[in-house]
Amino acid sequence: MAQSNGFALPGYQLRVGSTRDRPTVVKFMERTYRELDPQQPTGHIAATVDRYLGRDTPLWWVDVDSAADSAASPVGAIWLGQATDQRSGVLHPYVLMLYVAPEHRRRGIATALLAVAEAWAQQQGHRQISLQVFSDNPAAQALYQSLGYYPEAILLKKTWA
Image (cartoon, rainbow, N blue to C red; front, side):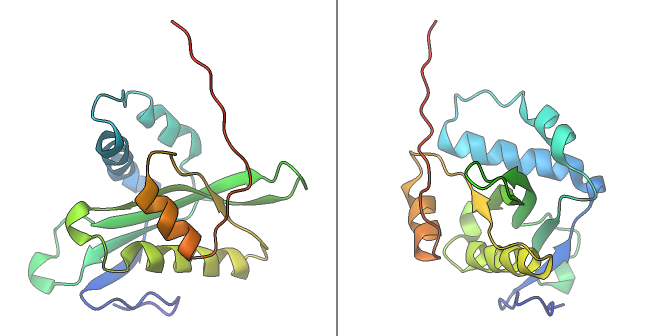
């Protein structure tokens, strides 16, 4: 079921998600955080999803393209929200989540999902899209930069007991 939006990876298919996918969005976000730091608390994720998941936040899933495995869970996803450019004040799409299951990485899924999101943003008349990546995730940083994303700000944090 290849889509006309440019997603054409052999062995995979793209489908549009909805607010009914809330439990799977939570599960994917929890996986993302646990992979980066297994000790990181994830209790806040469900509340974050509840705050932002809506009809105006596009969501796409990637499934293995196999009729024999039609009930399998998705292997990748991208979910967009909205952000305000702090310099120009322009409202634009923001990648809230991009996740690909480890056993399906390095096959072009993340690149294809970003292309779908970018095409959607352009069709909506937006001139930019943004995302945030953790500083201790060099593989994701390298991917994003290879696709033309560039650092614009540095998030600084101070913690205390």
